[in-house]
Amino acid sequence: MLIEMSIRGLMVDPITNMPIVILKDSTNDRTLPIWVGPVEANAIAIQIENVTPTRPLTHDLLGRVITALDATLERVLITDLRDSTFYAYLELRAAGETLLVDARPSDALALALRTGVRVFVSDAILDQAKALDVSTEQANQERLQRWLESLDPDDLGYKM
Image 1 (cartoon, rainbow, N blue to C red):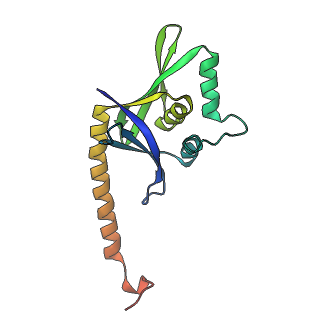
Image 2: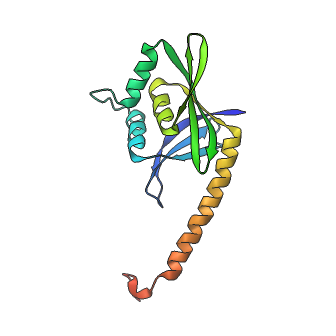
């Protein structure tokens, strides 16, 4: 089953300093964080903040090419999660045919924002990502604990 999600914003992962796109369903019951690169995050942020660049950016260009080819972007699908990497497709309609074009989720989301199309995520992917979040959070807590245990009091700036 596909769940419609919307882009709710961007944040920075405090551990990796990498941007995260936050997707939520319409009831705010389910959240999907997707880590993206800084350039991709910038393309998404520009659109979220309604900044109009003086010249078309790559995602603007792609939207114009789709239109020029007399096709329409119907929706964005996030369909798979393998080795902590999400996979997405652009669902296009051209000449009465439906075409699925492989895309990075960050590019697909940037294009969805520019064109106003809806984003859908497989229910199974949401469940997989939830399990991934739990294990990632636990690993980060364990890493923090090891770091704290390895500290020498002389290394700290505050002394008692």
